[in-house]
Image (cartoon, rainbow, N blue to C red):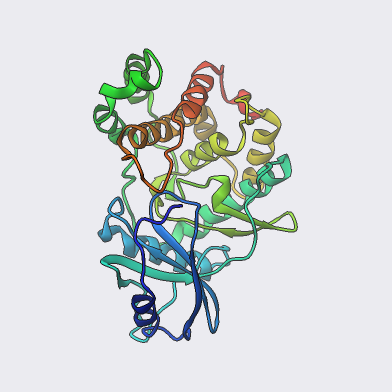
Length: 320
């Protein structure tokens, strides 16, 4: 389970007294997620999500994350709304960690992804980008192209333990990405982590977008590239161009892509694969034995990186 910090009953009761939500009736850890400790808390006024922000989250970033959710929810984006306490604040401390309560969203993430899911995701992503245009705060992408090599260097010595020759392959791929990374594309607030388990559906329609704790200011098209990696590959590694086309059609129905964004999509998709490959590689070699969360296999994103490096152009993603 993705619960790193335990919360006692007494500590939870004292925490909830700072809000107008009544007492806790039940509290259980949530297995999904790997960055923070999350609990589903049933209160006298209804269910809420309690998040304790762990050491990998910079406390200085939390006003951006919580402010962004507030901003998007006010513009009808179905995302968690931070709950304000008696003092009007959304951020406080619990069990020695920064903590916040947010609203509960109904729905389930899709275990079997269909082209319909991808189409709805594309539209929701474009609406998120549009709603974020007037968000006043900015945040640098802490896992952008300039951060990948330092991250790689922290785990390079163990890369070949995952797959022989992986260290040299990643070193060369990073050099290619650093040389080819585009500039001048439309910028804005992006989610940067919109995997299937961060998207809830009810009756085949999106009911919630969650986990905004990688959100930042970056190329809007990079967010699309993250989603192509997360949603459009099958379990055995094949790329599903029908899912990609439907995702892009849904997005472009709300926000048309510029020619430069379409041309850059293969490089951006390589970059998105590299980002998740490296964070998984780091976790793979640094997660201690006995940890409650199992690290994800980085090789999944190695195979995706290889696919994107071999495509001839944006037509491989269903763009015309």
